[in-house]
Image (tube, rainbow, N blue to C red):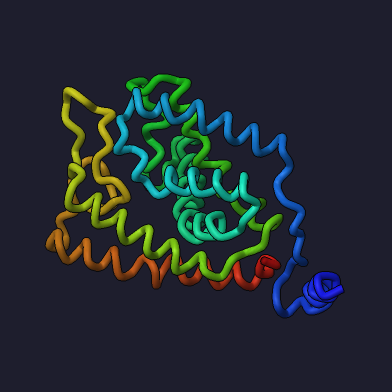
Length: 231
């Protein structure tokens, strides 16, 4: 009875969220299909780009969402939503613009590069559908309010790893597909490091401002749209 009363409160108090609690879990066929995709992507990316490619926010979110899909727990999918919805929206817009030779940022130029095999680029299209899928998972499981804090910690750790241990741009001529400037810790492009701020100042601003400008507003929107999970 308590569970039913909770569901009714979620439905009849829209000020708490725009959607009622679904809490149906993820269908098994979607679990299997998503797992199959990840199982194909990982060795392909490892071969083409190397293991450091998995330090990108989008790849980390892909793996976190996989755990949420199998456990039917909202926390990791919620953290992924906080982290990637805005950046991947930019990716989506740039990709659509690039199709019409009107790129917005140039961040999807690699999707049209002959130096990367077509199948690898096909797999990379997950950048387009993953944020939509993550939103659907959150819709099914609820939005865990701890997602903001968890993703902020994950992102901060990744920022420091990428800045102090991963290579800056550009990629070496003998390995053009080597991941450089991972998570844009050296600037907004992969051709060269940014030059309008001292490197450490740019990095500090990135670490401090991303949670304030991107993650926190996304958290507020998700908290408004989706109720918390029941458990």
